[in-house]
Image 1: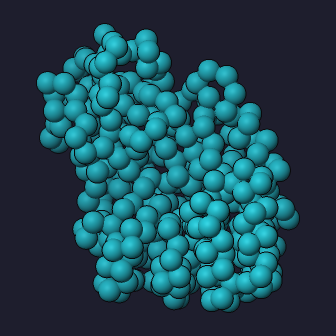
Image 2 (image 1 turned 180 degrees about the horizontal axis):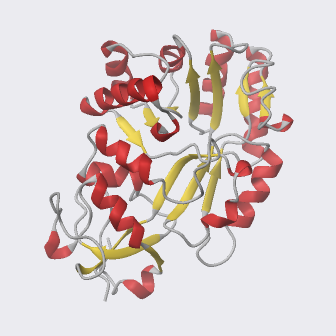
Length: 323
């Protein structure tokens, strides 16, 4: 019988196995299977991929961070149906200045961008998003496109907070991450990659509890080096970093992105912190099981997930085994 695990975060255990160190055997022939929360990809664009391929795999929940609200609602409904469904949370449109990012990009349908002409327009835009089922407000700050004024940015964040929705920011270009953090966003949807952020800004973000979504594997060269440097420094001071792939940006297929997990290891995440970044324990959309022990390093997690399968909690765990 599979061995039940209380969760992937701090304090999670695997019975007598505890939290193994590097080098533990993973896969068939190793310890009895363990159960853990499924993978959550915190940054995807389902309109750009074969979304049904996510069904039944170890990725049990995805967060779509920018698409036409009518189209993404339909996709979310379809993926959420039936056994072994994939839960979809979605932000709906990108909120930007008129003509702002990603307006005009070939991959972005017209309905995917909601222009904010003035601070007065912010509340109406947030209410529209909420009415369409959005679970967050996505804001874009791109130095090479028309940008929201500071007043419009503040109004969007205030309206999101009043509606009970987190404010997420795509911050690209010099000074944009600083703008987003100072304005009070809850999440940066990419680890900043266009500039090295100063230590004081990292400390400010960590104190505010700003979460960064990794999306490291979409980069290469100097951009990857900057992203890894910012992420490692942020993680070292306790900043929260979550697994996200920007699925749809590039050729990676739906499912677990092994390279993204490997890069999380490079920035210093391991053990319970790594597992919580990739497989958060709070209200999981589904459970997965694979031969144990519970992985500790990024390499072990990649190997463990390669064998992971969806499982039904009631069938896999005896009553009272999970907390």
